[in-house]
Length: 155
Image (tube, rainbow, N blue to C red; front, side, top):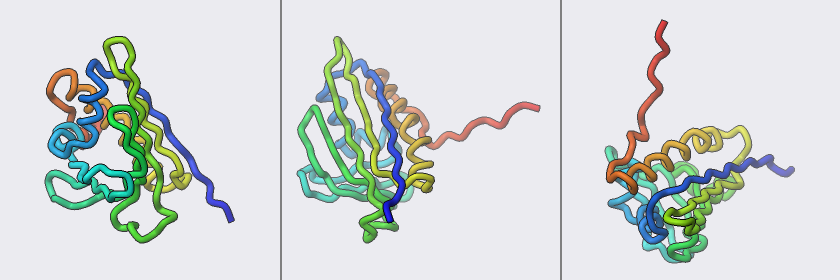
């Protein structure tokens, strides 16, 4: 039986250079400042990467570096750390960077997610705030609170 999958594509334009945007994706210290997590790897094709939460030091996501071509493209697999041994749990994230006038066009494609899964739901909510925070961080030096919750509606 074939599993039903879904994918998401996000595009943002950042007033920066491809080198700075790419570095922010793979540099653990920079990622901590806009993502609330460090992305840790030696960033070579075939290597493991981990997404480690700042406050707890807990590895929340894991995967493998599939392709890395700085500063144009990064492809990684992506799964919850609790599902590290389940090949069916892995999805794929592709970061494509293109120069666009005085900006960088960053396209993030997250594919092969199990439709209706908790991961697909989390990804649909998570990427927009993370990419907004990355943009703010690179343009102003200050990321957003990616863990913020919506304010309660006034009665």
